[in-house]
Length: 453
Ligand code: NDP
Figure 1 (cartoon, protein in one colour):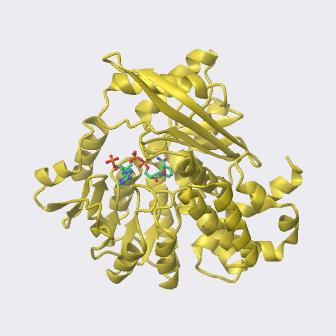
Figure 2: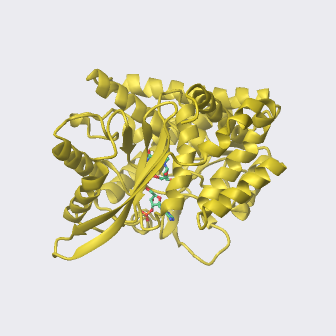
């Protein structure tokens, strides 16, 4: 690590205490950018990196709400408006008890580079709450969403900041949030993405992150003149991203053998085919049940409860060719990464944001596997949100084929950017550096053009 990056990281840690995920995300990007900062002293002079790691604005607010029994609850709401150099702030809302400012700052920071990579005009943002939607009635969810939007509405808008979903925020929550925004503002605009199809949503948006991560894996395999046909794949999570990852892997002839939730994972050697996936979708999206039930229904599957004290996750310790981490941050540590490599995995395409910690990333890079970091591999979701914004502005929806083709083209273009940039900077095949520098350049140049603001 250069002295400049060491000093920068020391300052980041001192100024942002107790935000380990943010430190981790900044360190990974800063180390990659050392190459570009050496070649472009103008970025150092304009303090682009120092400015890019400082959010333009952080909004924190109280979310008081009353449940169906009349009990009052208080949660904390956030919106991190990170960078608007190339477009309105754009990024999801996460509802999960682990949510805090540091986690949202890491996500907003990653989002800046990811959105730039899509080639669409979107800045970076992220938000959410420490509210736990798990097991709550629809009425409770609606009350919370309305309370949350009662404050957020004054900070967002179709040309200012356009939130979407993330962990714990799916179609149901976006509906309640949109309804409250519309009521308070008295206007029907594309202020959120991931909307319902009959009120401004885009076809393929629900599928986009998972499909995109698989398209990205297919592009990486293409470098080796291979396809997903016959490949055995490990997928973690069982939410939006995981479900559509399984669907696309199946369509392209691969076989997915794992899925998980925060209680444990299933290993189904026979593969999670179309019918089993339909069961998972009903289980998770309608009945909101647990993955354990999958093993009760399908005898080919083995369920393993999560052991919080173990120093590795057994999900990543099965023979396979590809891995699609699609649950949450830091779900693959150094040992998990070693287990993946040992078991023959040579393609990792990250559906989740920062699912691999710094030790794990090092293992993937040292072993020269095809490793697509989240900000490139999972950019299909926000890209399709960008396409939803375009359709809203035109007031005209595109067909499923049109959106899917555009998504596919965008994922190919992100892959090409990563490959080209990594070659240009003398580290061919390093998608981490390719994605970080590829995303950085457009934002950095826009910031220079717009002066010190
Ligand atoms: P969902 O809420 O639909 O699903 C999340 C899944 O991950 C659930 O199976 C959940 O299990 C599991 N999970 C969440 N937190 C943890 C945890 N701390 N430990 C273990 N398992 C956990 O979210 P998404 O599928 O939308 O998001 C998954 C990942 O993809 C996140 O990292 C998100 O930031 C990223 N992402 C999502 C995009 C999107 O378009 N939705 C776009 C780009 C990235 P349980 O039900 O038990 O909580």
